[in-house]
Image (cartoon, rainbow, N blue to C red; front, top):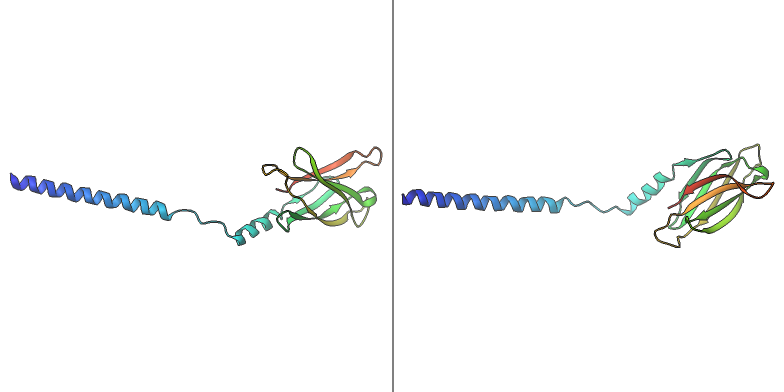
Length: 152
C-alpha cells in the first residue's frame, strides 16, 4: 500500500512539473511573435504607392499627387481650362488654409499639362487636409468642376 501511495505521489509531481514547462513555452511563443516595426524604407514605398492613384473629372485628368516631404506635395496632371488658368485651395474641413492659382501649358479645348508643388501643414493634428482644384467661372467667379484630393 505504501508503494502505491509513493508511486501516485511521484506520478502526480512529475505531471505537475511537465504542465509548468508547457505554460512557460506558451509565454515564450507569445513574446517572440510581436510585430516588427515599419522601417523608413517601407514607409517611403507606402508613399510611392499612394502616389500611383490618379484623379480626374470633366476639366482635370491624370492628376497625381506625390508626397515629396513631410508637408510638401508635387501635383501633376492635365487640365482643359478656359484661358489655361485654374485655382486651388487646401482646407482642413473647417477653414481654407492655403490657396493659389496655376496655369496649364495650353488653354481649352486642348488638354494642357501642369505641375506645381505646395507646402501644406495641418493646424490641428486630428484634421484631414484636402486639396481642391477648380476652375473659376468667367461669369461670376464661382467655383466650377471642383476636384477634391485628400492629402493626409
